[in-house]
Image (cartoon, rainbow, N blue to C red; front, side, top):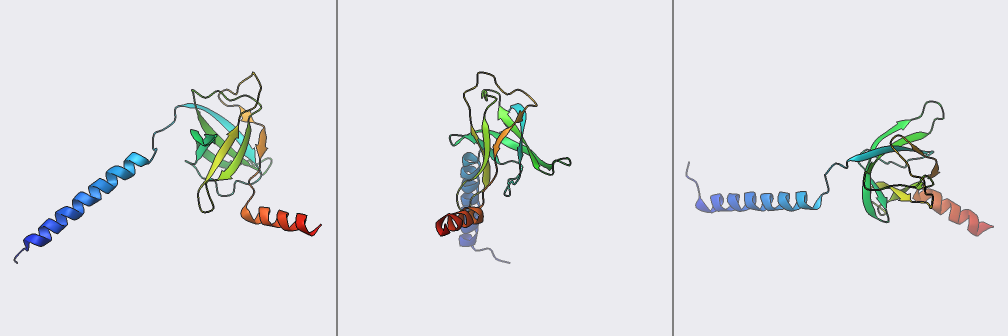
Length: 147
């Protein structure tokens, strides 16, 4: 079977293109693990939040979601967060689940409070805002506009 040199060159071009694409993809994705402390937040609805989702303050990643589990006593969702050890969160920090866009993933948005005492390993964020889906927002808007 005779090989065509153009097919070989084209094959090499495709391999080089795939390697460059992989390099850029790995350079853009932030896959490092965050070393820090864990805290738990309790939500009524998680809206599809998943393990590995970002934890952000002012849009900057400061941690990741380690685990989501059902609390068997309260039947709410316990979300375990790993927070960067350089970030000290006041005990009155508010946690909310937010969308990264209309079709984007969910993330946990933290709003630090003013307290001088800080959360430590194993603490619970007691101040949370539950996830509001697009349907919840639309129905609330319709309800308010009909009054």
